[in-house]
Image 1 (cartoon, rainbow, N blue to C red):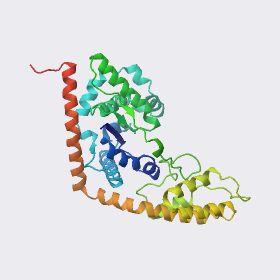
Image 2: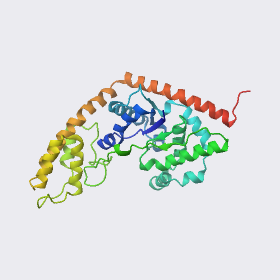
Image 3: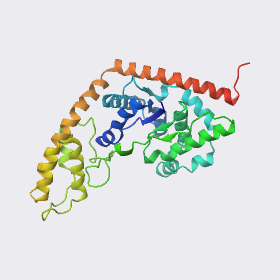
Image 4: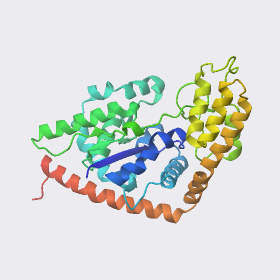
Length: 329
Ligand code: TRP
């Protein structure tokens, strides 16, 4: 069985796009692989969250992923800062990471541009910490989005460099985990592009009914079809795409026909869409809130996860220390 590692940003709530885009596939992934899911709270320190924000966002993210179906019995679900072996491997990998190559990564250059007053060393070595996250379990595969491909490439580079330097075949070179056909792109409500975190464009899984209605009713539309079977514009196609994910096929067909014969009223379509999104999201939201209120359960999951993660991590670190030459007298 392959080892798959998935790193989860510790900030930001999940939206429908995350749900259909990746999280749903995690459920299948955890059935077929030896999976590690962790919340990257060390990485978030590069932007200085307050202690309360740091704690609350880790808690929210954990609750959301558990509500979504990550199973602590099947996978190791843990918080990065509960596994001290990760920062130790990070230190060791740093000795083999060159400042020049780190400075050339796109994400670092972006940060230098967008936050010139806080170009900290943690930002520079962000890809090294990420490589430590991955290599600590000798992971074979990592599901990553487009924006993380370069970081995964760096992890491969550090793995290869280590193997080469010590003439060992120790770390596997981590490859992207491919969801293939299963990957659904969910459009946003603002007319173009995919659902994201920008205001008004996304529906979060913790949104209440009222704000879901408000967001859907404000979704971008067009001036309507002018003749039978006229082509569907992007904003309208997007609404149909979201509808096809949350509504019954009959509902989608009903509005498609209305569109085709120019009888559609976008207001009616949005009302229906809002109710269907609510029916879909409400049970998930209740589950998230239940879990989030259950500190006992969260603690148990995090402890159990850290224990599993540390078992694997300490073995790797033991091997690595030996390979490097740290030995007992
Ligand atoms: N950098 C990733 C992100 O912003 C999160 C992350 C940290 C990660 N460590 C990782 C992802 C290791 C995959 C593997 O989304």
